[in-house]
Length: 166
Image (cartoon, rainbow, N blue to C red; front, side, top):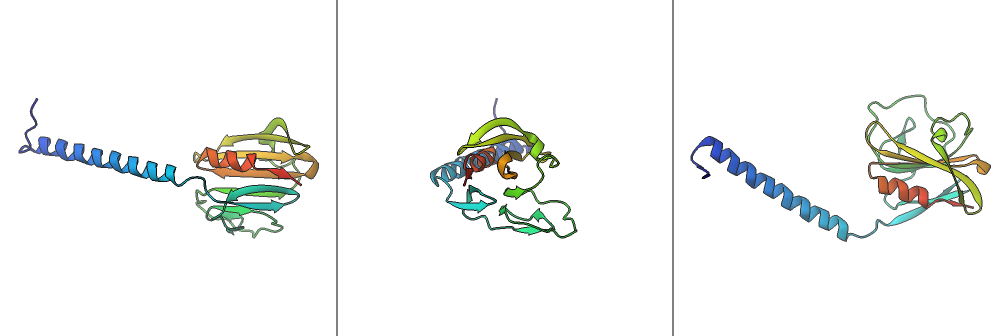
């Protein structure tokens, strides 16, 4: 079959083929660049007797009305303003909070028993409607809940695996 570039269908097919090739080449270069960057620098965050590691570029409590507005870690919140942000931004975050674990619906996701530094923990998770992964760890003897949400499941998993109980 010969491709006649003088005809419109032939020209469209040639342009589409070149465009697809360019996109695939760019994706390969970007993937290689990301892979070569190595591990993301981390910072340690402590609150309520537990410690976690999160990406170093995440600021503390980048919230508006209790809603994360950018990738952030959330700690030491007492009062949240009575307002709402709609639509909620699709960002990554980690939160350490103390509360009544029996009444917190997110804490109910943690059903798998484990241990962290001699303390019993419960872990679990789900996938949010927007596709982000949510990992949850409960430290019952501290009444502490750790929530890690990320569009990259490996990031959420790394945050909950970094949990240290003081």
